[in-house]
Amino acid sequence: MRVLLLGTAAGGGFPQWNCACRLCKSGATPRSQDCVAISADGKGWYLLNASPDIRSQILSTPVLAAGPGPREIPILGGLLTDAELDHSLGLLMLREAGGGLPIRAPDAVLHALRDCFGMREIIDGYAGWEWLPISSGTTLGSLMVQVLPVSDKHPKYARSSTVDGPWVVAYRIEDPATGGVLVYAPCLKSWPDGFDEFVEGADLVLLDGTFYSPSEMSGATSAGVADGVQHAMGHLPIAGEHGSLARIAASRGTTRWAYTHLNNTNPVLDATSPEHAEVLASGAELPLDGTEFKL
Ligand code: MLT
Ligand code: MN
Ligand code: ZN
Image (cartoon, protein in one colour):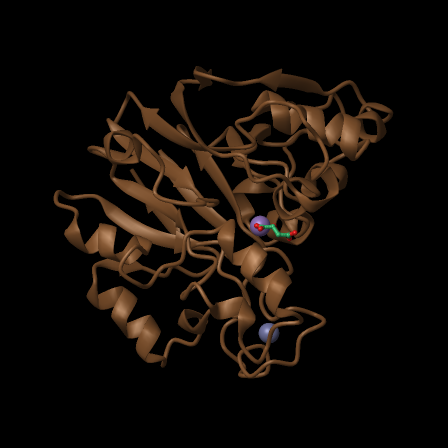
């Protein structure tokens, strides 16, 4: 299985257009918004989430180029972990896809995109897309997919919805031909129940790296303390006694752990920072956009 990281930043990307913080002004390597493409045969590709940067991500990724037919595309469908705009707005950018695309997501996510946003009606006005609820397992071509409910974090635009969750899930994707296993978990509120079993034997875990510290959004660069704290609560921080890095450092086996969905406030974005060095020293990775893994 080929795993291509199309984007590795949180909502807004890095640098963020409306931010003049030290990091955004530092010249550290830019990152586009979190999105992954996977393929068993290198010909047909599936998107994991659909970022608002999808157009430039596709155009800068030769294997995702259109052809050989005039309107043929190698993207065969998509899988959403949640209904956040940075993970779903790309679907609007893909509206030109001739016959539409099959999109799999938890029920609550499909509900949000239809009833809270109205995005599905807009997209279906261009072509009939398939919106397929996923709760336990499914297949993407020859790839086998398992689902783990992660949290009920609602997107801001759907905060009043009372539809049952899960609103956020993680995926475990296995290629039976190679035995390669990817776990994609870019939005973790906490270390979920059952997560240790879910990642058992995985070759690669792509993990929520939004914030380095729990207090990050209440620092000098944030717009407001209350909003910051609320925002941080939706994402398990990397550092600290209960952070994800302590879990990774304690884990055994041959699993590679890589952070994605990095927020523009996260000091690990600066490759010369002590925080960046600490993540690497603890056995986790901070891959840039364009990184490919073969599992
Ligand atoms: C999140 O990951 O918490 C969301 O994408 C935040 C947002 O952009 O509204
Ligand atoms: Mn996000
Ligand atoms: Zn910034």
